Amino acid sequence: MIVYGWRQAQTAKEDISECTCHNCGKPFTLSIYVFHRYAHIFWIPLFPIGKTVKSHCSSCGLPLEKKEMPQELRHAFGNMNNRNRIPVWMFSGLILIAGGIICSMVNRLIADHKNKELIENPFAGDVYEVKQGPGIYTTYKVERVADDTVFLLVNQYTSDMQSGFSELKAMEYNDTAQAVFKPQLLEMFNNQEILTVERE
Ligand SMILES: [Zn+2]
Image (cartoon, rainbow, N blue to C red; front, side, top):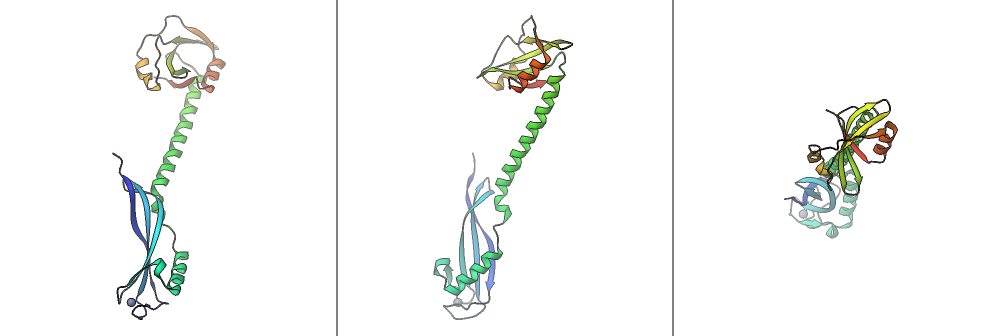
């Protein structure tokens, strides 16, 4: 179950000394409060979705919405608004998601680099995870390497899902190996026909 929705937090409060309360006429009694609403997922703030502004008089207790505020109080709020920014923590979820995306991209680059190294230096026993076509996955096993020629044993079975690789590896391979030149192997990797290399 995914818990999501929105919450509200007070993000600013300032005492307004330049205005008197237009209800009770007392000075130094007004404060302005700013509340931000933010979307959350599992209580982790994702991004702000709006704000509300209220003033309160500590003497007569009169609360005012922004639209009810007299001109001078609105002006005070304008000054206050220029000083206050949306707090960064309200973007925590987005920052986490962006961090996760960057991490997975870096991991992908590292894995690609490692796979390429293994493809360029094939070794008997290497297992290649192969995409033969749309929805056709299988594995090839390196039987032996002789100079520039790599002898591949092709799995007798295929899977229609990429998740089938672990099962495929335990299946029977053809007895007769197919000879492939090393540059061809690299081409198959670059064309994303060979997806990953496993070496024990
Ligand atoms: Zn008042």
